[in-house]
Image 1 (cartoon, rainbow, N blue to C red):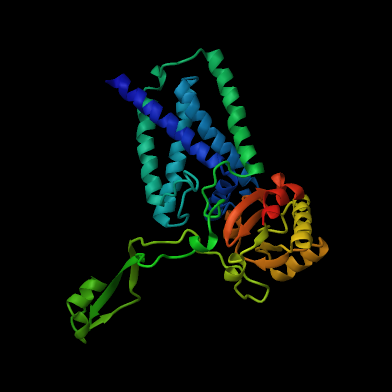
Image 2 (cartoon, rainbow, N blue to C red):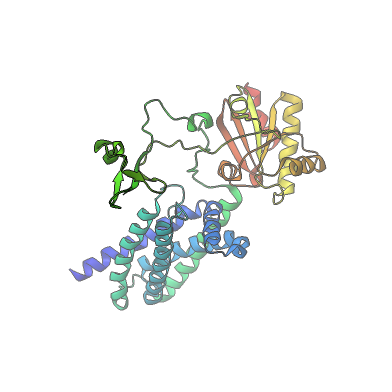
Amino acid sequence: MKNGLVWFCRIAVGLLFIFSGLIKANDPLGFSYKLEEYFEVFHLEFLNSFALSMSILLCALEMLLGFALLVGTRAVSVVWGLLLLIIFFGFLTFYSAFFKVVQTCGCFGDAIPLTPWQSFGKDMILLILVLVVFVNRKTVPVLVSQKTGDKLFIAATVLSLGFGLYTYNFSPVVDFLPYKIGNNILNEMKTPPGAQPDVFEITYHLTNKKTKETKVMSDKEYLKTAIWKDANWEIKGNPESRLVKKGFEPKIRDLNIQDAEGNNYNQELLSNPFYSLVIVAYNLDATDEDGLAKANALAANLIQNYNTRAILLTSNAPQNAQEFAKKHRLVAELFYADGVPLKSMVRANPGIMLLKNGTVINKWHYHSLPKYDELVKEYFSKQ
């Protein structure tokens, strides 16, 4: 019975850590953005420059510890590592939930979004499973010899780090974001007819002018009891609003494409029935200039030969962006949007998207930009 429980916990913990690390390693840049949120909360902004490296290493560590636990190599050290890691994650998720600071922990990346309390609950269940293995750490069966286990661990290290480096340099293998290929951006921004909105409960703090008695009532009680008709009762302070039930929320709710004067261009740019080449460089100060030059050459050829509309989206201030565009002789029209949605469009700075009627036809990291002839053959020669 005891051995069966230990085996169950061992397999569950190993697989969950591998899954969690693999999902985040699929999008290490996205996980690094989440780390930067935590750095800001704890006033550790000086670590921002290390966020990407830490992201890749943490993802690899999760996968490696999970794999080592399943194999049984160096079990005592591995279980200690797992225990310390889950305590650390548990602290972060509790802090996020209790103080309402980072509203999604990024535990499973964008594949399985969890609220802070859901993340904390998951971590507590995982902590219990880890503790079962920890108590029995000296009797964890070894499936292979130590020499073989060490070789497998080295191979797993190369694979896990290699996977994170690959997805960072050539985009996620699986795109879980709302701007993935095939999605229509305008549709992802819509709220369907009849969709339920958020339901809130409003709480009033009341004081009786004569007796000084106090009451705390919800908005429903306030109306049902008709206490508002009694002039002796008055509301003190501001009413408190609490979310009772989450309603429908569009997957894209923060995209506002503007020109330098602040005019909204969402509808015009995202309903173009012809191909549009969108260069996304959320931060021109940190963009890869060689990659941007290649994207600019693609745009110039498509504008000249196929009258294609090419736009560049950035979160830089218009004056700075215009100076940058003039300096680098960029041919695309300049438009502006908040950095958060731009980071979700393409996990690259810069990256390009090919749009038609607002649908994402394809997108590329600057390391894997298509050649002009390939792009024409695949898309524009078929128009």
